Amino acid sequence: MNTPDPVSRADADEPMTDAQAARLRALAEQAFEPEAFQINLTRAEAALRIQALSAKLRLQDEPPHTL
Image 1 (cartoon, helix red, strand yellow):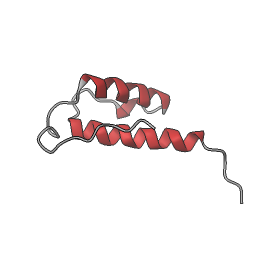
Image 2 (cartoon, one colour):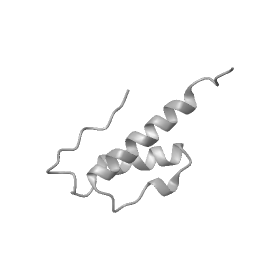
Image 3 (tube, one colour):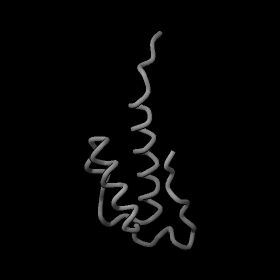
Image 4 (cartoon, one colour):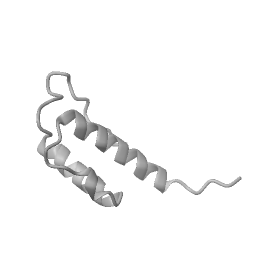
């Protein structure tokens, strides 16, 4: 499972890295949520969005639940 690297408190307010931007853009497209990608995100914001979109995509890959 690909989990984003933890963001240290010192780096949290820095602009997202190029790697985060690429990952977030790809996940946003796969999840059909293009608005999730914004170029001006901080590293912490990008990490949270990457984590949320990754979780959403994992849930979509699971078989449907039956009662």
